[in-house]
Length: 457
Ligand code: NAP
Image 1: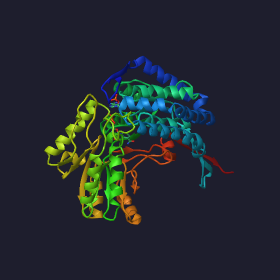
Image 2: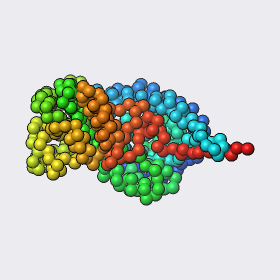
Image 3: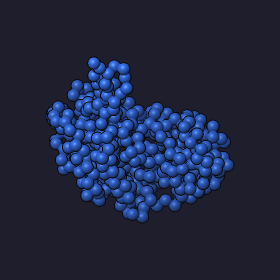
Image 4: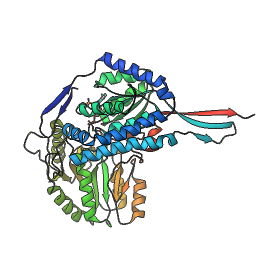
């Protein structure tokens, strides 16, 4: 895949980057491995945390420039890009402040003597990351791995090469030695060769099921630990006692954020029959009022999809859903002009034999289902290949909590949309992947949790 910045709002090619050669990839691995063998990885944590602290400051200092890069490469709205940049700084600072405590080790109670756990780096980690949150996805990996001392070789998505380069420069500018974080414009074959190498000990991938399955198989073949953050078809449940207007507002925002291209976006709306008409009326009115336009225009409510190819894919998925019997309740149109714009879209009457039922729609397309009971809502929620996050809207928090416990996902948010924060673990079950990023849980995925015992007497 060619590494190219193409502005999705205009279709203009901004810049093309050369792929790294096999020799460059191997040289990068040698440098990263040397870092792992050095005091940087094996020594005191404080210099590593100082880099994360400085990285947070640098991200904030360059926030506007970074935000504009994100808009121009993948088309999110400028306000969404600013939020992502600030979240990225927050994650760096979170690990700078908390990682020493998380990695302090713990005493173990045993009859064998004095025993404790220590946390050590495992070696070079290969990271494969997606374009939808070009900065946030990188810091989610960089924060914990810099803190623990694992050097990272990062293959970012081929449509966000400027963000990839900017992040590598920021890590260096924050004081990290060469090899702590290396951006590689690498091919799938080069990633496979890295994973096969004994010096690589961990793999982190965020992306589609397809890429996740390929890369996880490579990691499994060579017995490397992997963390996979994949797709989702998250439910947004609206119970019969919910504040329906608020649910419709929050639900529309949750579906249309970043033009619908978030893994944890609400994708399937399960609405109790008693409030279904009112919800759909309000929800449709909000979709109809969305101003789709230039992502640099502060007044736009939704920007383009990340590429013309992504728009063609979502348009095809909608057409297929309708051909298989779904109702196109609203939208379903590619907008004229050179940009990758697509209208906010609502599908209803999606039956279980429709391919849409089990698919992730990575664009501004909501599926609305009507349910008659809480049990039916849970059954429908769990009748999915995915299990990333979910939402329950209800005036009765106890009732919502009971449902939250029954939904097969990595997280559930009650009376608000699914989001992310440095201190909250992020990840899923089923085909949404395994392992966690962020929080203390994410820090401890790719570490050697070493146990030591000193015999008594
Ligand atoms: P994708 O095609 O899987 O791409 C993700 C990354 O994988 C890119 O860097 C891509 O490189 C790389 N890749 C693809 N095939 C590969 C292979 N055979 N070997 C090595 N690397 C390979 O995913 P996408 O469609 O761009 O991203 C959207 C998907 O990511 C959605 O399903 C979304 O839900 C998911 N996602 C999940 C999370 C989460 O935290 N769970 C977060 C964000 C996104 P190229 O660009 O060069 O192809």
